[in-house]
Length: 301
Image 1: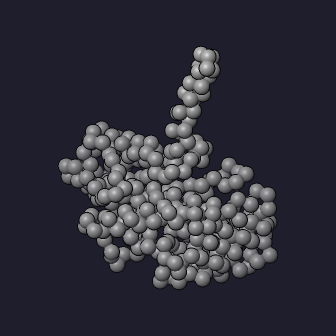
Image 2: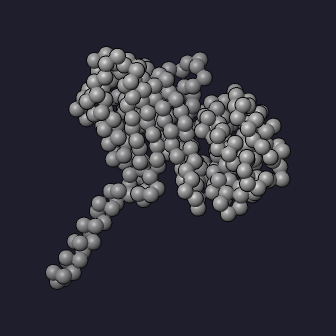
Image 3: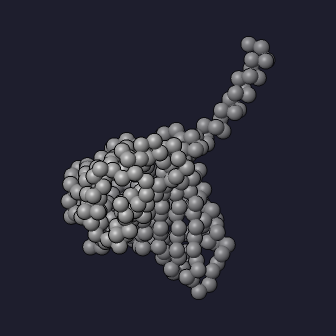
């Protein structure tokens, strides 16, 4: 082999190597630490926390899948600090994630969660690490849990049941955390619970939720640009699928779904062509999410 061929191979490898590293990263996350509620703000520490979490989320490989740069999942982690004593933090964690809609510039909100029981320890300049085989940190463990839930929802929106491996990974984290007594992982009587949420989404009796989630996104939103009337019919069909769920076994799944989708549903059905079965819509919405009645009343057809 002559030097020209060797140089060509090395040059190709040089360009290929960084590209594969970029492709393997799953997330395009923004992390914000809000310390405005604290009497004093140690801004350098909070900015370091933002940077460390952003690096952990965006640079670590969370799956074995190959993601192109444009396929990375956009998500936000907004941490509102309520109390800081030394290296111990009490906060509220707000997590949101988005998915692009086919043949449009629109991005749909797949997940919007407010976790009011986020307690963790953090020491500035100490590297943040996540170990999938043990629960060593409530900070990185909780963030990892939410990342796997985001992955599960995202994959489910493209193929029914495709998110299951990631939900199972989140469940493993929850089980390990609850065994350590870490704050925020208790089986409690509160409506929102990290453990109850992942258990509900993996409950075999809630399979219809996964079917409906796929129908809403892939057969509904992704068809909206080309076939808006048919797409709206599919979204109504997705809501009909959800009525088959038991509120006692899937109540949290339904609440989180409509927390993310209520405004979108109002917008979709307040403009453009009307599907033949749109008259069923408000009855379905009132049955599934009566807590958003004031929003459903805005729908005009």
